[in-house]
Figure 1 (cartoon, rainbow, N blue to C red):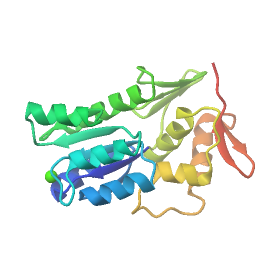
Figure 2: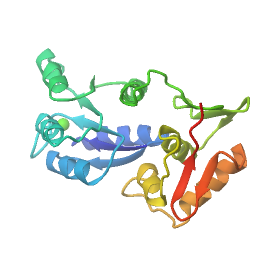
Figure 3: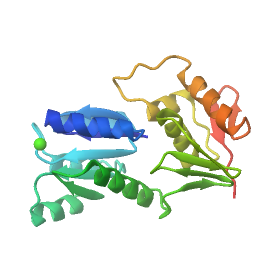
Length: 220
Ligand code: CA
């Protein structure tokens, strides 16, 4: 899943970016409010992490503008402003949650997962489709009674498909969800990932739709 991180403090941004990548997210980073707005409109993100004190346009304005233009992407505010008034203002402006700096990365990641669950309309932290269960907290997948660990990118790819079972995702759709801006993507990267997932799970789960992309069939 691809995340936009909006943070002007370089040290904090780098620490968060590392933690997110470690947790299998693709991350794009911007450090001011205008760049945040442009990015949110240009790219479909799974989630935005938004600092409030930003150059050019503060986080409240960014949030208000993107909600005014009906961008539905979940937003988690990350801020040192712990005043009650700011928290209320942020939530009222359309944020889904907030985390107060300094925070533990573990808490940030757990809150992100919680927001994503609510946003997906399911309270269940485990993504289930038929006999497949994907566990975001540990990056494990269980299938036919076996539990396997996926690599970071394999997990991102499976998550992208399992979030929309029955939908065909093209190579571009998958690349957009798995890789950030500054990551070089080899032309056959998606095929390579699918190949390595199939080696773990067998060939039947990810279906190839010739000329269009890949899908996971929707199962009860
Ligand atoms: Ca700031």
